Image 1: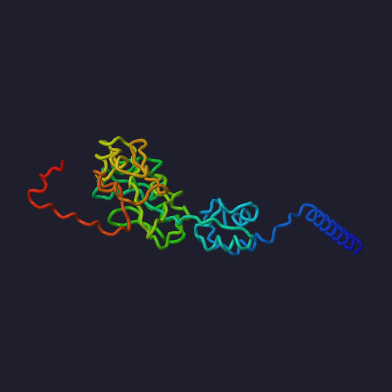
Image 2: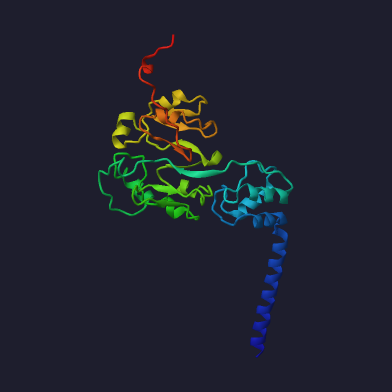
Length: 289
């Protein structure tokens, strides 16, 4: 009996000593957390999507509290309303961030970009991109296997079964950037929504020379510079045989759209263009001195 009592007493003493040591260590190394971090986290949408550039809402909340200014911090899911609430909690001012939306820079449908072979591997864009260039003559275009769809937590992107291209549901897109990161071909990017949701962009990422690009896809950018020449705002640059429209400089004048010989520049949500009536007979030959 005495042996059992001794064992129990010894174990109890060891347990009590360990508890005391753990308590002392926890008190010595404890980290005081600013209570505002939890307040900011509660104001966030709890999407944990990573669109802010941080692993989750908790990390973003901590960054907001520690930062001297909120100018470089933004929650794309919550938008301006959420950032205004965060700013109010911290007694700061939130800068107004331009709302963005994901756009797919590829118009190579089955009709415009004929298939040359049949892929019979894993239904995954990342895997397919690592194995070969694609089942068409364009090694830059969309593979259509839906990695972007799987990555979206907001059901904002789908593969069109007829074109085999992803389409973004603008009303659902939060510009979290998950689809941008998921695409191994880098054909999805975030662009400003624009006034009245109007946008102009080059729907192509093919960097091959003009003749090669055109042979692979009828609507490929051929780097002809015609769009660049007519842009009055210097919003278009040509690099590696590919045109790019800077949405910070673009004023949506649409002068670049009709001059594109391959129709690779898209204009979204604009009213129909007014047709110019034909000139009366005889007037087309009139020359003004």
